[in-house]
Length: 209
Image 1 (cartoon, helix red, strand yellow):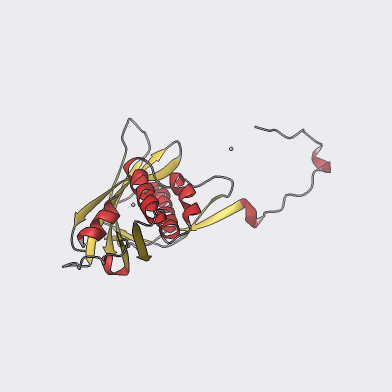
Image 2: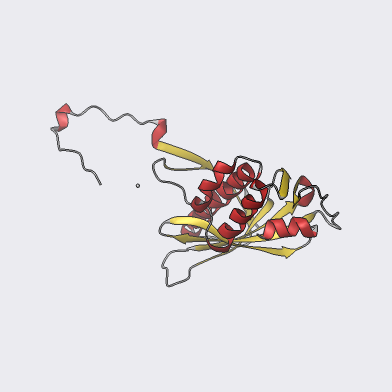
C-alpha cells in the first residue's frame, strides 16, 4: 500500500485554485489581456522572486493501493487541493463566517455545490445549528481515471472517514440523534474541468470506518 506524503504544492498565486447535502443528512440520521511595452533589456530591473508570486497549499496525507504514474500523482495533488479547500470553506461558512460561502464555487460543483449552499442557507436563517469541526481522516485514493474523451486523468475518487461525534448539524433547539456508530465512510468524486479541480459528488459509503 502506497502512502502519499503531506507535501506543499506550489501554484501561481494569481491562479485561483478551483477546488457538503449528504453530510447534513448523515449527521441528522446519526451516522480575470494586457501586454507590457517592450523595453531594452539593459533598462529592465532585475526580477526578484516574491512570496506573493506563489501560494502554498498543503496536500493531506493519503493511502492508495493504486500504482500511480507521475501524471496520476499530479492529478491526485490537484484533486486533494480541492478537497482541502472544500472542507476549509465549509467549516468557515458553517461556523458563521457566511461570506466564505462565496468561495464554494472555487472548490465544488454540481450536486456537492448545491448541497453545501443549502446547508449554509438553513444555518444562516437560524433553522439549523452547526457546531464542531468537520475533519476528514483516513484519506484513501480509490480511483484515478479519465472520462469524456480526456487524454489526461480528470477524475479522482477519494474515500475518507468522518467522526460524527466531532460536529453536528441539527434543527434549532433540537438535540442530535444519538448514533450507533460515530464513524462513517464517505466518498468524494473530484473532477477536473477547464484546468480546475472541484468536488462534484459526495456519497455515504457505509456507517463505519
